[in-house]
Length: 227
View 1 (cartoon, helix red, strand yellow):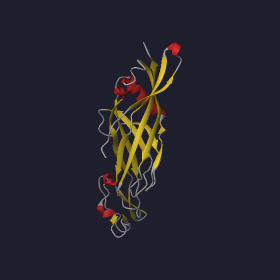
View 2 (cartoon, one colour):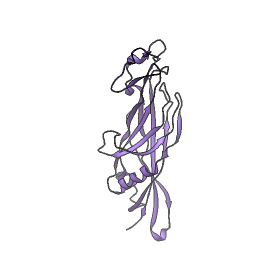
View 3 (cartoon, one colour):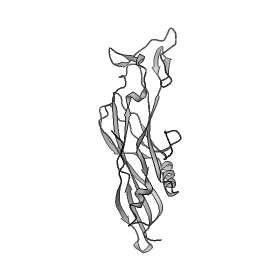
View 4 (cartoon, helix red, strand yellow):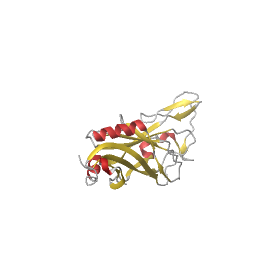
């Protein structure tokens, strides 16, 4: 599914007309991302083809396990156990908050404050063979090419396999303030990333399938109708 960007403008509240203040709620629209089991790059040598699970490989004699740069495998309790694998993907496309705020031009001329109001998310039935652990949603400047160095915005709760959920992301206070400062500083073009750590164990289903999710971030722009 191709990531896409939309935005909407929703008047949120009009405050104290006598002092020229106004609050406008803004939305990025649905930002889509996918978590694909193929991206975990689990070595085929760890697949038990008879049960399609992570193979239980005895390493008691040698202590040696089939490993790769992407998936370290250690001999734990005489069995080869894959280590946690970090999976990070971009969420949607670049979001231009300056363009979104400019749509409110007829309602708000001078923006004094930006607040992250909420972030809704939805996961279509998790078609992965494993439950998705907690997902971190991060933001970074437009120039970012990966989640490395990105700032935490919030978290999505774990999603069991074959389960669909729709809920609200837990917002990180420091990360939301940093995003607000970034936008107010004039650098309104932002990328978002989703990151999680998958820890597979011998006997677990071999990773397969895809989980698709969307996120919709809502902001409050607080400012004045005229200078």
